[in-house]
Length: 111
Image (cartoon, rainbow, N blue to C red; front, side):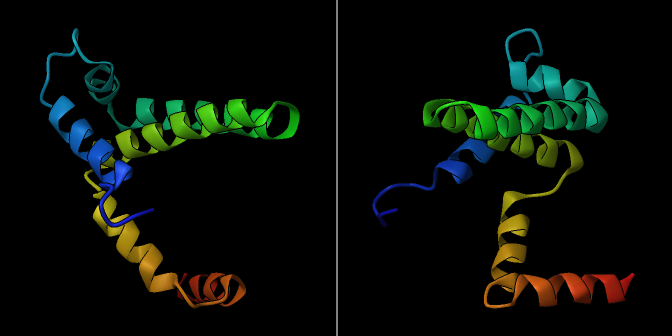
């Protein structure tokens, strides 16, 4: 990704924030959000399953399309829960440089 190109995930998150205030009849995003976090989570799970199916049995174009749907629905769920993309990205940044095995072990010890 180049510095000149805006971050598409940030742009999409901003669009979702705007659509959250739109008329539900005019916005698919708003209609999802009107169903609450549970509806958004169910849709995310459906998209995750479709992404997995595409990954194991379809071509790269299908995987790309399903992955895009999955990311969109994740951002909608984050909006429904009041969690910002910036917070998620900060958490990922915090984890950078830490072994996934070490990080998972630390989470288990925190429970």
